Length: 203
Image 1 (cartoon, rainbow, N blue to C red):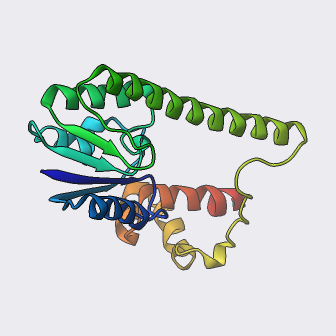
Image 2: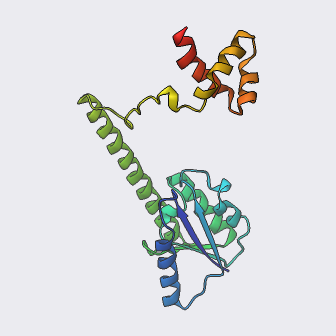
Image 3: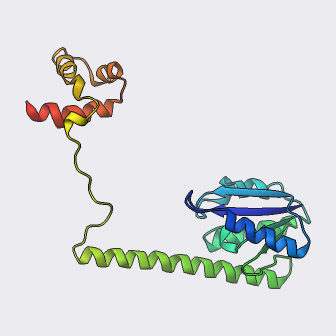
């Protein structure tokens, strides 16, 4: 069996580029993909909890997993090495397209697996380090970090504004915030925030 494995980290990324690469490669080799495994998940998440993990539990000797690049399998050296070791133990081959890597049971495959995995981890660490340095520089320059703070919604626009008379009456009667929330079909936190911001502040 030949499996095409595709992983993207977010919904904004597309699987089509990876699918095109795999299909084009297989067309040149005269192969056909027997099954596709696609998932939208971070490569840092442990592979045993991903669809990749379910696939690996079912691969047999002679099966092949084709992916666009080694980093699709995982984002750390340890994870990639664990996946490759597991596949070699099961007799499953892994082929990548961009690096032209061919996993087998020979020593050269093991050395290449280590080198590619190490490169992927180093690149990820460098990106993370550059991001931290950029944030530190912006903070030192006195620039605001994170998204801009939004304006506080005027209380007339709030859902509970039209129920304020009831809320005040319920509070005088000693009703709990849970009772008020059930009556108004909202959460206790919503009621509590409204009371703190627009009722207690005016008492």
